[in-house]
Image 1 (tube, rainbow, N blue to C red):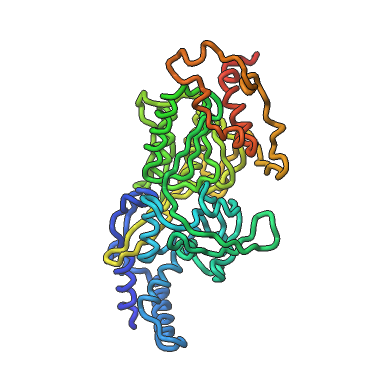
Image 2: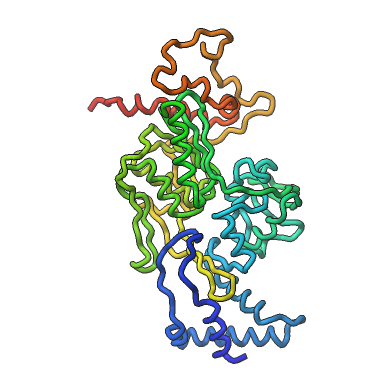
Length: 447
């Protein structure tokens, strides 16, 4: 095949349509026209000639017959895979799965993964999903899927192998981050809903809000959860839990932050050219939550979760507690390839917190570094719990409780709250801190 023909095939495949609404970000990016791409420099023409030469070698000399579609798709996949861990070529199946991840329900085990130096690493498991229940942790390495090594696979290819019909099993060879010997773990696939918000009262007035990801309805789900909680009792403080949240949609991260910020910058996006730059700011609506807030983060808090954490930290809206975050500070644009049913996901920009920090490969340091402590099997931190009058059998009730028109708190506290607190030292510290914030903020230190 001649150079001109191969070049034409590449151009037809690479010319893209505008970004779909389901894409991870909506960044306006300039695209090369066919004419400008054909006007390649002498050096580029030489590289394209090399591509044509290798293409012909494979077509005529490779041990088995391969189609032009296989070769071109492989070339595109290789180009993107060599850029960074998050740029990728998506075939029809992978593209469909990507859209399902942000907009519906799919069957799988419930993990977010990335590739690093040829290794497939778990960014975070989704809470209460099969992988989470099987003991998969953030930072674990997936060495094989059903016996197929993952070393030469892209992250999206690994995702496709892990997903499958509900009720079927997949076997993962996993190297836990604190182990030297891999383990084979069989996990039964299940429906993975995209519900991303869980809220429960730990004590009267103190709400624990768990965000598991940032999908298309996250802001609405969070807003509904806050309104529902406020109807039960006054919200005195919020522990916003972003641990093991792998991220998701940029716009949802900004709108979640907007629920707690009254004005000012939330995040800025800076690309290769000026027309890719933009700033997302908080609205001036009065319908905002101003409760004292503590945000829990860890190494599984990534991407959109880091946008929220960085915005609330920089704007002095919340105290961050936990461990350093993952450090994914890049924005991907999802672009369908015309007439093929496939798409490319390309890193087009970096995002920056309100103070101008780029967290790419750095992550966000919490204000209070509190590492997670795994509770002992025999006594899961129960001695840390305290017993008060209200816990005693037949204790006298407070005659003033409930006179403000809300529930007294006895009926709103999650019955499992003590168990959650017993197993989770970061949550315990977060609760005690958010209860103390009003007093701490009111203190006037001597000059």
